[in-house]
Each structure stands twice: as C-alpha cells, then as structure tokens.
Image 1 (cartoon, rainbow, N blue to C red):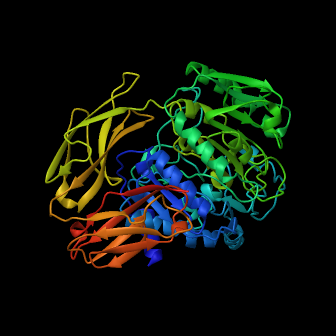
Image 2 (image 1 turned 60 degrees about the horizontal axis):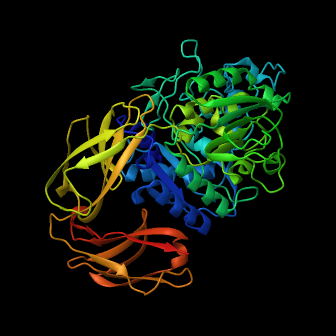
Length: 595
C-alpha cells in the first residue's frame, strides 16, 4: 500500500498551483512525544497563522537526535507524503517544516553501499559528482574502477533530505550530486547578481532551473524551527528568535549586511562573489560591507552575515544581530549538534537573535556547493522568504541543516488586502461572492487573488474579479475564509485577510466550552463541555490529531493537559453526522494559553 502511495506521491500530483510563500503552503510537523516540540509549534502556528489543518503530529523518540536513511523514510518522509496526499494538499504544499526534537542527522551509508555495489557490477557507471572539477579536489587519486568520491560523506540532514524528497525517498543517486538542486539560481552575465524567483512545491524544475511540464524535479522547502538537543538552543531562545523574525516582515531594514574575509580556506572559497553581492545590495538600497577578520567587531547593525571560520564567540565580538537577519558561517561541523562537538554550531547565531542559520551535519570538506552562496543575502533582500533565499543559494543541500523561521521576509512588498461581500462572524448560506482588493506600497498591482477555506485553496480570480464559493460543499459551523493576494512575479509576495464565518446550510448546531473555572493548568485534566443535537459522536482535534472523543451528542470530555504543550493552544470540536463529512458541524475554536 505504501509503495503504491509512494509512486502516487512522485508522479501523480497535479502540477497546478495557486500560490506559494505563506502559511497556507506549509505542513508543520510536530513531535507529540516532546513537550518542547508541542510548545514551539503552538507559538509558531499562532505567530505565522498556520492553518490548524496543516499541523501533522508525528511521533519520534526525542532521545534520538540522529537516525538512518531507511528509518527516516519509513517513519518520517513517507508519513509526511501520505499526510499531504490524504489532506488533498499535493498541489499546495511548498514548505515541510519541523518543530523540534526530530533527528537532525541522517546516516546514508546504506544508500552509498547500494550505489557502490551497483557501480562495481557496472564498471562503466560513475558516482554522482559535480560538474565543477574543483568539487572533486578532496579525492584526486585516479582509479581504473569507479570509486565513491571521498567528499560525498555519509550523513545527510533532515532538512536537506526533505527538500530532496523525490530523490532521497527512493535512494536515487541524484541526491548525492552536488548539482542536485535545480532551484538554485546562479549569477549570470546578463543579470550580474542573477535572478530570484518564488518557490512552489508543485513546480517541476528542469536541468537549467527552468520550469517544465514533465520530467523535472520537485522539492519541498524545509527547515527546523529549533534544535534543543546537544549544542542546540533553549526553548526560550527559540521562542525569542521566532518572535523577533515575525516582527521583521516587510520592514525593509536599512542596516548593514557584512561579508567577513580572511585567509582561512573556509572564507577564501566564497570570496569571489563578495564584490558582486555588495554591488547588487547597493543597487537594492541595502548597505553592505566587506570586513577583514573572522567576525564583525562592535557592529550594532548586523542585518545579515556571511563568515568563514571554525570558531567564534559572538558575545565577545560586541556586535548585535538585528531581527530578520540570516547569519551563517562556512565550517565543517556547524550543523553537528552533538554535545562536545568541535567548532562553533549554527545555534550561536540563533542564540543572539538571527532569524535563520545553517551548517553541515558531518565533515563536508571545503566544497562550496554544499554551503549557501553569498548570494543568499541578495535573494533575501529582493523580497524572498528565508527558506527561498537559502535554497536558491545552495547547489547540493543534502548535508545542510537549516534552522530558523522559513517564512521570515524582511524585504517583501506585502500586499494589504481588503474584502467586501462578507463580514467577520457572519452567518453564511448558499453561494458566497467576494470582491477582493489589494494595495502594495510600491504601487505595483497584484497578480491574482486566492480564496482558501480552512487552509485549503478553493478559488482564484484576477484583479477586479470575484471569488465565488458554494458553501453547501462544506459542513455547517465555524470556518475560516482566507483571501490571499499574490504580488507580481518573480517574487510573488503574499498578503492575506482572515475572515471567520459560520455556515448554516443544514441547521446543524454545536456548543463547546471549557468546563472548569479558571485558567487551564498543565497538572490538571482539561475539561470541555460539549453538546451537538443529532450528532452520533463528538471529537476534539489539535491540528490534524484527535486528542479526545465521545459517543453521542453531548457530554464532558477530559484531556490530559500536558499532552497539548504550553503556550497558545487551539482546539477544534466537531460533531459527527450520520452521513458524509458535510453532515458534520464544527464549533468555534477553543483558544487559551497553557502555562
């Protein structure tokens, strides 16, 4: 069954997509066995308005910070793909984002053995490699037989292999190739600093990065919101940098991006692009400066940072990282989160407020294809999201662990959306016709409008058009309408207005409330009183998981509060009808803060 679903996941998805770059295009993966993972997800879902239906609760032992490729496929990647398929989000999901307490490192030795065995049986075959001869420098020894390149080391990252899901899921050697990422944008003779484009998970990318109708590669933008194991960050640090990043959206900061240069090979390998980056940032109106040394000293305006050094002490530098900044350094073990590991980990930048950082999860050798190009700062300042900027700047991401807020977009031109045709809290029946409008501070016009119901895309129209929705296709009760405005290409920044309504096409009713007086407590069961005349049962959901249920149409439901995580919690209570999903009824969400 799963094998058949895997085939569907690879080849059966629609190539159509309505929009990318926002919470409606995200699947947020949460570990229900980790209170930290639950808490981070609770806060992030509220900060970024992630639809509850886009939260997948996937159990993983928090004591296992690494795993092997087969376990990753079986327990993480395939369930993620199954969920996307079952939720009918195949043409919509652009981001697969992990909360915390999932394995940051994936041992891929079994795939290497399979491939080297195949190479031995077929001497004419060759191992995956880069088109650039410099990438092969770590292994110069010639051999009459195919040999596995020394620089293609045997550990991948959770985020890199999720991004390369189509190749890594089936063990294809393509994911080892240092040119595996066709979404990567390269500087060109015509464009100097190259181009930047929005990302869509349903797009097929051809060999030159072009979008093709068939035969291309699909990807999912992927980050971890935080790592708490080993050399990771504390829960408070993670919540702080996620909150800071959310405040940075659309602010168009005028502070400085620093590129630090020294004689270390970790730095020298990226020097060639520094002048190009500085020129392009200046053209965009963003200050940039090339410094000599290992870390900026006493700079209080760090809006972005490119470094190359094995170790540093940010606190001792006297510098300050501003909200929304991408800061990263080229070094071997920046993504190795094991306690006691060598070199400074990526978590150091996040501890002091960066929105995102990255590092490789094993010895990568000084191969620049495995690390972000300095062009990451240019993609970001053109308005791309943090995840789009990262993945447009790395050729071979299978070992790169990216941690931070994937939706952060300080330089985006965000459309401001207004809607006529319905008011928040309205009772709606039959056909609904909405007239959307939007303005952009630059004076540009939006490209399109999209209507989502409970996080799923339902309709679209061009500017001056009408969004039409047949509400009889949905069950009665509470629903959330989201009207998205998609900005002009190539960046396609999104704005949105969220409108809660109550549908009443069948006369179904439901009431739900917290039964116990006073605020909820982690050490006491959470009690809910429910009543839904005509229902055969009632379920309570957190995201996509059922956390409690009863038979019949009314009663008192108790939930162990410590299974929900701390922070802002939202629960959905649904009465079950005796027919199709349309006979159900949904109560207004129960929202509260768990200490």
